[in-house]
Every structure is written in C-alpha cells, then in structure tokens.
Image (cartoon, rainbow, N blue to C red; front, top):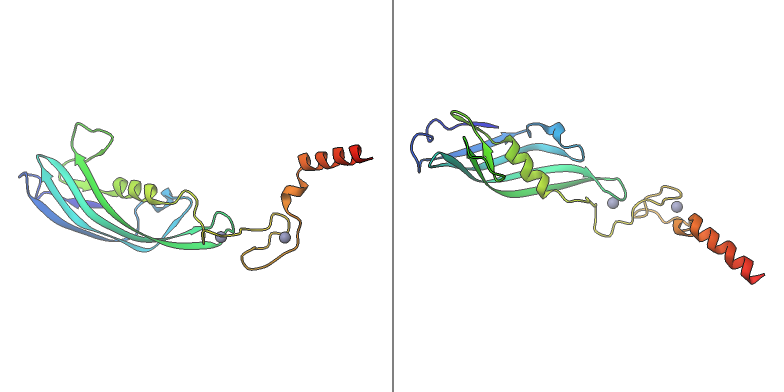
Length: 166
Ligand SMILES: [Zn+2]
Ligand SMILES: [Zn+2]
C-alpha cells in the first residue's frame, strides 16, 4: 500500500488525494480473522514540514469465528485514520517513510488490530456449545447436565455431604 508522494514532499502545505481499493496487504498477519472482498482506503496525505499526515477513512468486512459457538461471523469496520509519517525523529505515534514513497501497510494493519473486538461473538447472548454433547445451544436444546455439576471439587463436596448425612 505504497503511495508516490513526490508531488507533495518538496513544499510544506501541499497535499494529495489517495485511494486504495484491493486486498489487505499481509493478510496472513491476522490469524483470527480473514478480510472479505476488497478494503477501501480514501483520504489525503499532507506535507507538514516534511512530516506526512494521513487523514482518511478505511472500510472493510471481515469473517471471524464466534468465540462461544464457533460459527463464522461477518462484521464490517469503518475507521477514521489519522497518522504521521516521518523520515526521522520517530516516536511511538509516528511511522517511518523513505524517499518519495509512503507505505501505509503497517498503519492500516495497526488500526485494524486495535478496532477488532477482543472476543468476537455472533450475538451478545450467544449460548455457545454444550460442553457435554457439543450441540449449538442457540439452535438446539439438549438435556445434558450442566458441566459445573460434574467438576471434581463438586463431586468431593457431594461425597462429604453423603458422609455427614450417614
Ligand atoms: Zn455464537
Ligand atoms: Zn448437551
């Protein structure tokens, strides 16, 4: 996702429109989601005393897996991007560029990672899979005992209860 900035990097204040429609570069970078179709990046690059400022929007759809029932889930992201690119004096909020090209790949990937939910769920109230029979509890009712009744500590407690009641 490289842009030729030779038309703006000579004069501070100059800016240019940018647009990218295509696959996400380094798609294998994401192991929990895959980006669906093309993503769309639109915005402007502005030269501010040699620092290039990106102001833009990023739209994409992705497919992930529900953390509880493991079904595929499709979501969209609509992000606002404001980033800085510099040839030197890099701080934590600034990306590097060299010569006449600004590569937005890392900035775009970083923005996507931050925007992804920590736990992707198909619906907020997803009931997940039954730990005993594996049925999707959103679609089917099963009559398995709740797993917490079968944990060893509960069993031990049950045995103790029997012991005292005898
Ligand atoms: Zn689910
Ligand atoms: Zn079950």
